[in-house]
Length: 305
Image 1 (tube, helix red, strand yellow):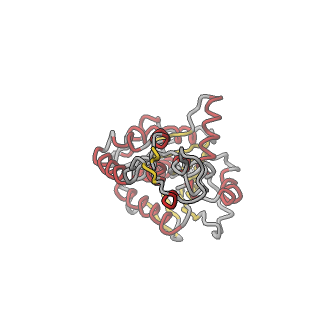
Image 2 (cartoon, one colour):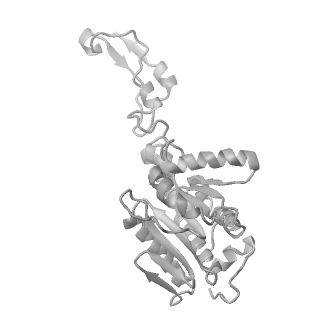
Image 3 (cartoon, one colour):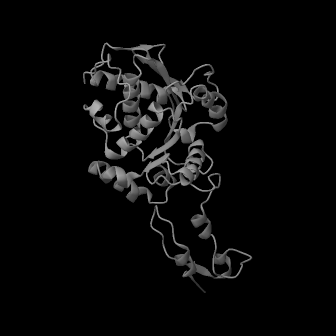
């Protein structure tokens, strides 16, 4: 892709976003997110977005192409994109390598530089990749263009609020939180709930969620793979529920879920000793591996002498 930076792309129409990235066009659900973020950046809206896409559904590709687009737009005027990840290695390192590979694929080989091991620069615009590990030292950077939080469900909330959030304050920069669901108390879930509440008031969409079924519409092979995972783990397995269905695990600190706790209740009167020791044996419906028995099935269990 050959772009004339003399024009600097001061304000490209949102519809032209994917056209600028012809080598690897975005899928409709990815493009929807990019349009919203670019609009906020170029119009200085300073919005905060939360983006959930099922595991391996194209979240990282979306982020990399967004970064390239903004680096091109701000190549002459300058500014920094700051992207933080739960760890530098491997997460931030993988993001750097992906961006470098895509810059080369889009025709910018020889035009960008990589310095310090964590900065990618095109013209005067830079993308900085930082670790959000609790021990990392990151204070002092400014996210003049955009602040990105990768795998936000795994980023420490106090670390983000104290050291990363202020990076966007002086420029009122747009902030994007990417990830998948986990529990009700993660950074991503709190931002998501806040975005949904604000959207109910002003009508501006700030949260985007695309589960495995949505991704499968554009990649049937992906759907086949996830179906195999689903058949092996079951719909309610914590990993399948959070990574592919994008549903949180309520009461994340508990050992057992509500449905699992229900399995511990019987319809018999309280026993003072194990049933086998008093000549009573329970007869229950057998639950296939990877699935959870329903409360109805439990209530229908019979106890016989």
